[in-house]
Image (cartoon, rainbow, N blue to C red; front, side, top):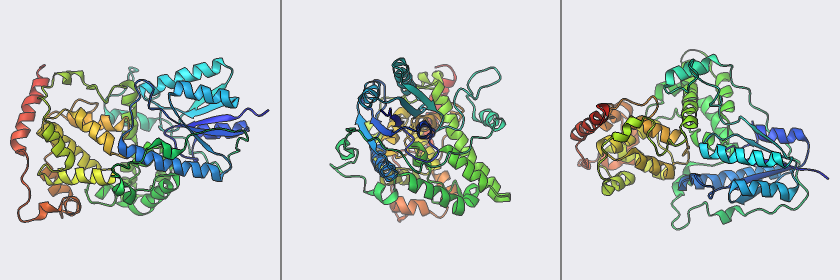
Length: 456
């Protein structure tokens, strides 16, 4: 009797450079690929609406690719600690393989499952697949986690180069027995009442093939201009790989090594180094989150617990969410977010700064809105970057740094291409008036931050 191997897919929806899948192939037994939608385990953060849309498309693509190679993707939902052992027992599986997750709750769930299955005599192994360097491998000389990016980056540069990516699985031996699973459509991941995802469909094609195609296109056509145009709001020299990395349709190892191969010399090499530094920033966000798993709800710098947030002005929050603030770049960014599920990275900083510092609204409200609207909503990068803007996070922007939206517009959208696309009314003869005075609210924010600086 065969004892099938279970490959538990999570944020690694790919067949290339997938160590868990490779381990199952090496075991040389039938393979059952499983994806579990866990919205019930205590402490698990439910993904937002735009992320649910992406997950549906990526799972559909993955299922097709596995089936083309002789296997099948089984969908289940429920508490992981209950469902995974139940699937093992149901199939008489001899081994379970997965790629590691780094959130606090997820690590606890995985450790409990691993302990239970091993006690039952099942082979269980987990692998590094979604970070170049695991969070316990990069430490200061005093054996503490890094809290500042630059020394973290220097430490990473001294480590051995990331391993090369593993080849794509070309054949997946299927399991002959009956395996019941859910229908993807029954999960209701796609919005229907109303269907607000039209802009997402126009903008994206989820799935590993599209991820590979986009990486190639970026490296061939855009990498050379990255260092020159990356900050321009309407510039084309951006990778658009963030949702691909978030869902694991492509691995950081693939991105790293393909970029190094395209590095070249001169300005091209400078652009490649700048792009690779963004991968290292992503690593830094996850390393900080690994050691501070409550980063989405708790100030990383606890001194900011004393920040005197006023009572939430919900009308101001909703005006910001709708992109009707009367500030061109802010409104353009918020509308781009709603339509496409992403926002230019610098515009993310500008819109976040406006909410936190000009409207004095707690960063957690903005982080939650982005969590719901971003197709690349990442459990580390999203709260990490919000805390960076707020001044409460690791290596954060100093409390007195308040992004001026008009200055940013003149510098990074000098021909108003971005504003013309997303908020054209600001180019009319009588553009909308700002909902607040930028100068007065900047001073109010600095006064509030002084309260924290002087100990409350």
